[in-house]
Image 1 (cartoon, rainbow, N blue to C red):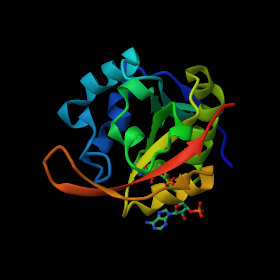
Image 2 (cartoon, rainbow, N blue to C red; image 1 turned 90 degrees about the horizontal axis):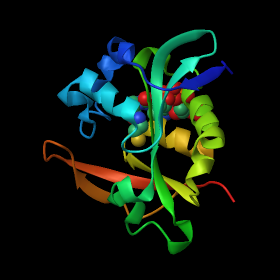
Image 3 (cartoon, protein in one colour; image 1 turned 90 degrees about the vertical axis):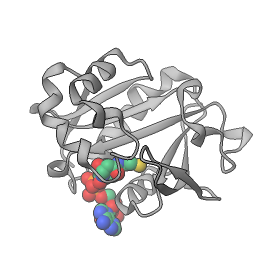
Image 4 (spheres, helix red, strand yellow; image 1 turned 45 degrees about the vertical axis):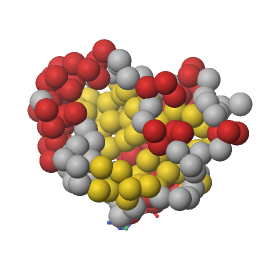
Amino acid sequence: MPEVRLRRWRLTDAADVAVMADDPYLSPWSTMVDGVEEWIRREMAELRGPTRAICLSDDDRALGRVAVRPPELASEAVRCEGIRDSDQPAGELSYWLVPRARGRGLAYGGVRLFLDSVVPALGLRSVVLDIEEGNLASIRLAERLGAERRSPTRVHPGRHGDPHTMVVFVLPVGG
Ligand SMILES: CC(C)(COP(=O)(O)OP(=O)(O)OC[C@H]1O[C@@H](n2cnc3c(N)ncnc32)[C@H](O)[C@@H]1OP(=O)(O)O)[C@@H](O)C(=O)NCCC(=O)NCCS
């Protein structure tokens, strides 16, 4: 498996990740759509929890992102019907890769590294992945990470009001 590295975001990452503003699975939710430079500034400030750029050990360019929101800053996914009391406190995990970096296991490597190095400090019992039902690559990744699919699915409006069917996966962390 290629060796991945995580690092904090820099303003100069904007050009490398701007393509994600058009991604069909990200654009319904991400504020990157409103401007990639502002998005990077918010990532650098980590106002919504720890976030890291995924890169290769021998190439410092940002190829992707992995982030976790603590419970108080997470979406309603961490409190939906599929989440049990025994999962709490639950954070919300998210990830993506730019298209040219996909298909090489980099997301798996980056997320595992993040779970081992960044998530433990948050004192969570689990992380929740909120995935669109048709997003098979993300669902496969969640399964490979060991996350458990829960029901029921939820229909959630994206930023344009269009409905998206979402499914939560729960991955125990820590303790
Ligand atoms: C989700 C994402 C990070 C996965 O990274 P990736 O590099 O594409 O992952 P991989 O290529 O290793 O694929 C993961 C698995 O899904 C499978 N897969 C990929 N695309 C697929 C598709 N269209 N249909 C079915 N299976 C697919 C792969 O075969 C692989 O299966 P395996 O683990 O059994 O080998 C990446 O696709 C992405 O950034 N997508 C857009 C943003 C996004 O959806 N983020 C997650 C939001 S919840």
